[in-house]
Length: 323
Image (cartoon, rainbow, N blue to C red; front, side):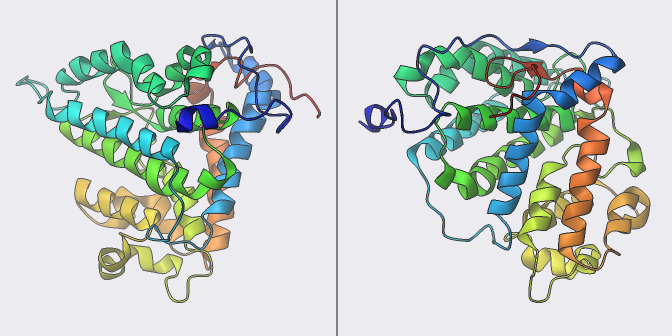
């Protein structure tokens, strides 16, 4: 029913691609460090960072418990993530000598690899079925690496790219913005944390105590935006256990802090030095701006992260075309 209604009239938006668009299987294009210039000038980079910043603006000053509209597409994405979660329960870790990188993860991943297109097809209406193989690649890239059994910000970026592609084909709309972060991305984080814990995944390309976090970055950006102009919670409060325990259900940033303190032992200033430094910044808007700069420098402009990024028709490698 809603699937048929979802099709926009051809002239309703210049961004709405025709069902005849030539979708392609995304592939890697950044093979050497000098190729990074191509990435920074690309339409993909402009669209990706634009997507991150639009959502950053959309969640500003809002709690996770804020009332927002939940479309059918959002519900279907949450159901997809629930399926991935259920597969973790059905794939318990195996006994092995090594503590880290449980090989049962490969069994879990093989199932996703096999089912990704049919999962994505549950979210994408039939008149856009041609887009499914292209979009599904980003879902497969977003859950970690099955050879190394690791997970990092490049995988997180693939999930944001997956959501960005769903926006570009019109499955997700402007009024889904808040739900994209609070409902879909938040559920994705829960599933990723469960994967990391269950299979003892290694951090991909971790900078140790000098990185922001072993696994994630985006929830710190969007989570700091949520806290802008908060009546009493200031950046200094996130290193205060009581403040975190009382407010983590409302704020993504504090949920991240809680997860770090569950996973790591010892003084916060030692295991999470960068975050400790951030707690000294006077305002959340300054934290937010600083994290966006840091995300560009530490993730989007780092060859070891971007060499794995894949480009297709929706996130193309060609230089930005001025509209």
